[in-house]
Length: 127
Image (cartoon, rainbow, N blue to C red; front, side, top):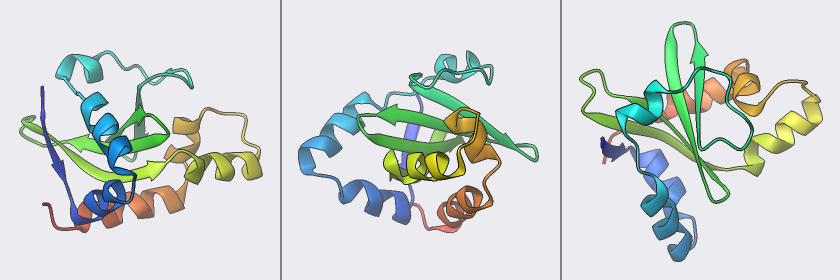
């Protein structure tokens, strides 16, 4: 299992969830290297984990309840760094309006706005 590190933004986002939902999400969010090694970029819409690649950068997605946790693995592979914790409808609405014939992770990998959210999380102080 990896150590889980939240930044100020992702910590604030998860704290906005109802307390019971926070506990359920954090209890479910168990990440091991094996979970991530098995991803091949062809995940189904129901998969717990997803992988998003852009310009040599790899980001992972975890689904828990109605929440999507976007994170990367630290360079030394000792931890996962959570950049954003978003409600699923944040990007489902985007996909519906855009009417894209691809899965959610693939659409996000192409979205400039999504990567701006992630970059904001990367720059935030870790807590």
